[in-house]
Amino acid sequence: MSADLERYTELLHLMPLGALLVEDGVIRHVSPSAVATMGIPAERMIGIPLAELLVPDFEATCVDVLERAGERPESVAVRLASGLMPLELTVRSLPDRGAIVGVRSMLTEHHYSALAGGELTHDSVTGLPNHFHVLSELKIRLAAPKRLPLALMCLWVDELGSLGEIHGQRAVQRIMKEVAGRIQEKLRSPDILGRFEDAGFLVLMTSDSSPDQLTEVASRLRAEVAFPVELDHRLVSFTASVVVGSIIHRQPSIERVLAHLEAAANRAANSGGNRTDVLAL
Image (cartoon, rainbow, N blue to C red; front, side, top):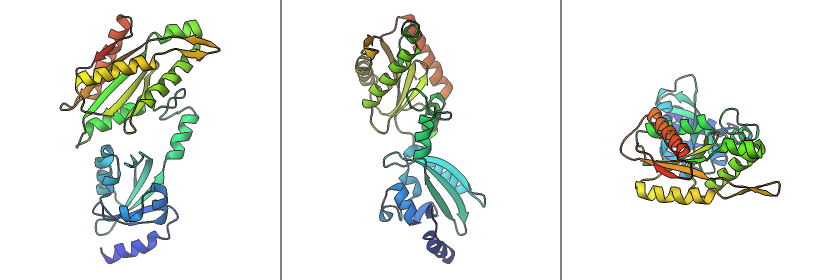
C-alpha cells in the first residue's frame, strides 16, 4: 500500500459514517462505523474483493462503478450477500488505484417507502416491490455476466375484478395482501416476490429445476394460496392461476418475457382460470 493510502487509513477512523478503503477492488481497511452498518467483523472484510460481499447480481455493477469513479463521487444501490441488506455505496477515487467507499444502510428508506405507499419501489397494499422495481431486478439478473440459473413464477388471482364488484374493494385488498403473505411464506430468502400487476405477483427464483419440477411446485403453491379469506365474519372464496418458466441457457429480452407472461394470463382467463401453465422462454 502506498504512503497516500496509509494516510487515508488513519483518516478512516475519524469518519463519522461507514467507509471502506479499497485498492484495486480489494478492501484494505474498514471504519468502525462500516462494521456496525454492515454487521460483518472487520477481519472478515479486509483482504477480499468488495464485490464478493454483494449479492452476485450486483458484482458487475459494483466493479463498474469502482473503475469509472473520478473526482466526482458515484453512488450505486446494492444488496449485501449476508442477509440481503440494501446498501448505498458512494465511491470516490484516490491516487494509486485506490478509492474511498462510503457505506450507508437503506433499510429505513425501504421500510418507509412501503409504509408511505411505496411511491418509488413498493406496492401500497402488500408492501411488496412494485411492477417497476421487480422488472428492474429481473433486468439486472438477465444482464449479469455470471448469470445464475433463473426461474420465473407468476401467480394471478382469477377474476379479481368480479370479486371487487361482488364484495367491494376492501375485499380485493384483503385477498391480495393475504395471498402475498402466503406466497412469501413458501419462498427462500434469495427469492424476490413482487406485485406484478393488479391481480398478479411475480417471483424471481435462483433455480435450475426442470419444467416438470417447477410445474409441480407451482401447482402445489396455487392450491395452498387459494383458500378463502375471512372478511367481516364471512369467507370470500377465489381461485388462482400460475405460470412458471426456466431461464438457464438462453437470455431472453425483457420484452419477450413480458409477452409470454401476458399470453399466459390471457390463456388462464379464457379457460376460466384455476390452472397451471409453463412458459417457453
